[in-house]
Image: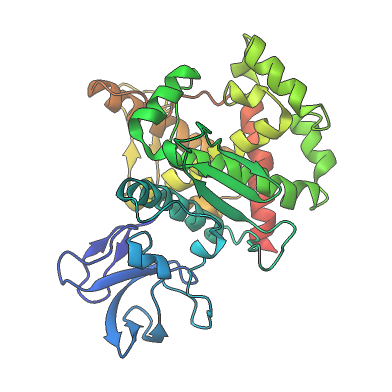
Amino acid sequence: MKLFLCPACGNVLYFENRACERCGHRVAFLPEKEIMSALEPDADCWTTLADKGKGRMLCRNAEYDACNWLTDSDDANGYCRACRHNGMVPDLSDPAQLAGWRELEVAKHRLFYSLIRWKLPLQTRRENPAHGLIFNFLADDPHSGHRVMTGHDNGLITIALTEADDIERERRRLEMGEPYRTLLGHFRHEVGHYFWDVLVRDGDRLAECRAVFGDDSADYGQALQRHYAEGAPPDWQQTHVSAYATMHPWEDFAETWAHYLHIVDTLEMAAEFGMEVRPKLDRDGELTARIRFNPYEVRDVQALVNAWLPFTFATNSVNRAMGLRDLYPFILSPAVVAKLGFVHSLVRDVAAA
């Protein structure tokens, strides 16, 4: 994630800003240019000061304060590149459900920022009825007691609205023994399943992927039952990025994909702030890193890891000083780094095509 500048006054803008706090201009994100722009009214539309664009429209979900993106200039349906992938949304006349959906949209838009930066293939359900990417945001039914489960099914990603409740999400995190559980993490994990279909299965990379992650033809239902009955192997941290990743090669890929996006997006933000880690007691340089590079342009995944490890050592230590959990409570073993390298090669091949 980057920092942005208001083209009207030069003030620093953040990705979720709706207005410039210095000059008061309405601001919005232009996904095709990956920039934020100040806006000026132009009849029934907007002019973008960043590129002198005419006739731009805010996404229809701006009406609910759920989106700050602009639509494409030739768009006909009124939704931006992120929101055109929405299927079902919760009852927006319910203030609690509206608030929860807004939180989900913040995470979803950060996901799409990364997917667009990588130039990954993004087809809607209208463009590809069989396997287009679509998100359903669903609330539990209080009358029947039905609980929505977050998951992926052939391009359809269901996100449980209850995950936007901080208390409920923390309860589930503790119940499932997870060190980390966030809305953005859910989105990154579930879209990993989608891109396994698109880039691995349909991209002629299946044999290569199986050599790294294992045989995905193993029965998923049996693997799920075994995981929840027996848990992860005692030495799972030597081979997997999380305990859940040990359940099945599909979950291993999705978890690794999510962590790759965690690393790249966070390092980009660190680079925007010019962060440097140089502990006074680190005489051999193992905990030193100067994060001044664009992680989306790095060729070797090891360069990402070499910056990520010192950065997370430092941020974890700062969090502990505040009595908080580690920012990144995971171990990147050599086997996990190799899996991250496979994901790195997938996205780089697409970006270079």
